[in-house]
Image (tube, rainbow, N blue to C red; front, side, top):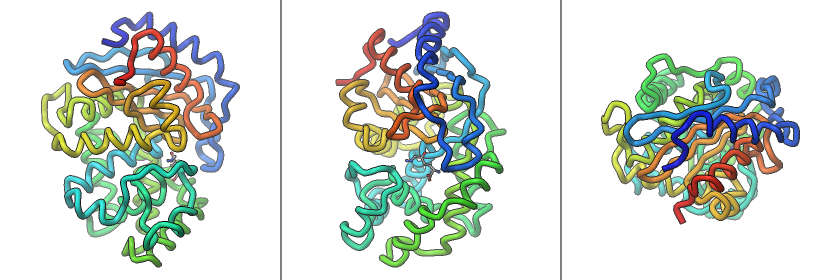
Length: 309
Ligand code: DON
């Protein structure tokens, strides 16, 4: 069991918050620059649906790269393992999340995994729907089920801010289109991608999403199976090998649990059979992971022995 008491969790949140100004809030997506570095929240959801939380838990944030796990789960359910892994690989890169370099050196512009931007864009290109609106709605419908909240939507300001500045992601798309890995209209793929990255929730929601993956695809609150066990297993495995960008190896050694982070400062963890964690702390370290969130996970690991290994 991890933390069962909100006062104990609040102490760790207060401790981690002390280093807020050692990190830097993401600014390459202009809308994220406005985030308050001192905000820090954490929620832990257990298999019985019980949730322990502390800090600024009502503060919403955009999922950014955490949404890559969700879109991966959707395409695995819709197309199956063989089709998806024909388009995108299974190997960590060791490069920054937005790097283009491996597209040129790998065969036919196939991205190495679905957690880097290139891989996630290839996954987004597979989402079902007649147009961008339908595709975004399809993703949101699934996210609402994962969060038990019918009001979940995306933040339009964040989506537009990224859509109008995201030239590198467009380049990744065109490179992959040239290599025959993705088809379709790049602007539409970019619209769907930036909107799913801008899906907004708080750490209570995120802990529930983490718990669904931890519970092999069963929602701990409703008891509903929302994805097959196999899909949850593959997503958790990617969280271990590539979820914390090119710090995934260090994270596996130091914390030892499946986790996925996003540049807004969110971290989702899914500890198999034990609990889901949702964290939000906007200042980032050099790699792009939440600086205060990482500190909090180190404190949780020290106190409650989170590691699976
Ligand atoms: O594509 C981007 O740069 C952002 N929407 C998400 C980046 C992020 O969170 C880190 N990526 N793995």
